[in-house]
Amino acid sequence: MRQLTTALTAAVCTAALVLVVSGCESSPADTAAASPAGRSPQAGGPPTGPAGRSLWTLIDDKGATVATLPDDDPDVAAVRKAVALHSGTTDNRDHRSVTGSPDGTGGTGGTEDEFTFYSPEFVQALEGQGYGARLASLFRDNKLATRQVKTAWYRSTIYQDRKTAKADMDSVIEFTAATPGYLKKGGFALNTPYTQHRTVSLAKQDGRWKITGIQKSPMVKESTRPTTS
Image (cartoon, rainbow, N blue to C red; front, side, top):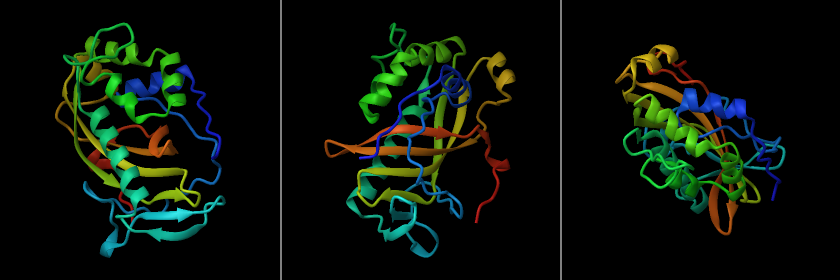
């Protein structure tokens, strides 16, 4: 299995909390990651492309496509489920249910549920930065509540050894509650859809797909997101 780096910087984590309100960014050491160029967005549901063409491909260590994988491939289904459930967990949060415990865990919307999707190394890196407590403080101090509106999928890849994978997707999120100061500082508005693109890295550990890193773009108003072909 490719070795994955779990080193995170405090600056990255802080930026993720402010802009993303879910998780931090970590980059695996893979250099053969497939580019999302030519991706085709699909709102919600299984990630099937135009004319029913699957968006999932099997690639070699150089990133070259070996085969197209059907949506019902066991690894495709497992990776897609892990990413979808994770995004649902992190994008539906409320300051009233994010706990105030020292480590930020123990309640719906806190990190206890979120961390179940992560590899032990990724969890350790986040805990080392006090991510749980900072997440709870962010939501409590700014009276935040967010909800996921929909998702869109792009070309995603599983490596030929079927031990690592990358999933590209969008999550469309709305702020349903927030202090005026937070909205002004971030340039946000309530009940307005914002789109964030994510590249989620995963590894199969003990037969289960676990998230090892997430790369996130800044959130933009859905209507202003560039159209892809």
